[in-house]
Each structure stands twice: as C-alpha cells, then as structure tokens.
Image (cartoon, rainbow, N blue to C red; front, side, top):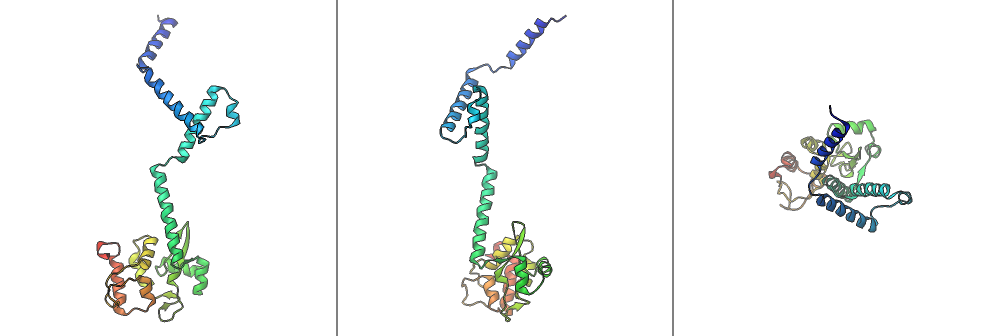
Length: 229
C-alpha cells in the first residue's frame, strides 16, 4: 500500500526531473527581461497607472508586463503591418494621381453629367461602357471619360471607351485606369510625330483616325504583357 508520504516523495522526484538543470540560465533570462522592461518604463513607452502603483509588487509587476506586451503588439512593425502600410501609401499616391488627372464623379454626379438615371449609369458600368473605380466600397467615375465635344462623344462618353474597356476586363479597376492615363511613347501607326509621349485618353480626345483607333485596340489586347512596352 502506498502511503501519502510516498506519493508526495514520488511527486517531488518527478517534478525535479522536469526542472531545467542549470537554474542560472532561466534566472539570467528573467533578469534580462526585467532590465528591458524597466528601461521601457523609464523611456515612457509603457504607461503606468495610479491604480497599478497602489498594488502589491507582484500585482504591479504583472500589470506592467501586460501593458508592455500590449504596447509592443500595437507599435511593433510586422510583415502584415508593413503590407497594409504599403497598401495605404499606394492608395494615397493613386488618389493624388486621380486629383491631378481631373478627379472623379460619384454616381449621382455622373448621372447628372450624362443626363441619365443612376440605374443607367450602373448598367453602363456593368456593361463595360463606363470606367468605374471602387474606392472604399463606393464607385467613382474618372472625369476624363466624360465629354460634350460632339466630335468624340457617344452619349456623353468619350468615344472609344466602350470599345476598349471590354478588352481590359481581366485587369483591376486601377490597371484599367492606368491604361488610359499612363504616359507612354510607343510608336503607333497614325500618331505623329512618331515616338512622342501620349496617353490613350489624350489620343481619344483628339478624334483619332480609324487606323489610330485600331492601334489603341492593339495596345489594349497586349496590355500587361512584355509586348506592351
């Protein structure tokens, strides 16, 4: 029969087997952490509340450790945070480019410009007759595609948009926008002087010939490939 003392002795021996043999190492690790924590407190990074100061040393220490870990979680630069910050930076640059290029209309403004209903504007967007940008869950319409110049207008929309957009469906809305607005110097048949800098939107606004329209469609077909350069 096993006595209570024998059970306790067996438990103590089992616990001893699980202990790290060199107690100096965990003690040094704990000391390093405490020094790091104390330095963080001195620098003012980890906030110390009046309530924590009123607690016992043990409770105070636990509270400070929690505050320290919280501060690190909030302020540390992780891969995910870096990725999100790059996305925010990219978004800011894109919004600046939109403003520089003339801005955008919301759905109500686009409908008013075209003399149509919001439903019609949405249908044209879905059919690839209007370029729309999804910004924070709302659709906005770049200004460059609207015109009242009868020479290049198709129901208030720049002629050529409806022919080119379907060729760009596989690309994001930003990539579609870039197709029309990025500056390039590709040599196009019918564009003079040869090799000059242009944007597709600019060419469309200048009432391009059929030969030049065919060249723009060729650009759309090869967009995103090495040949596009």
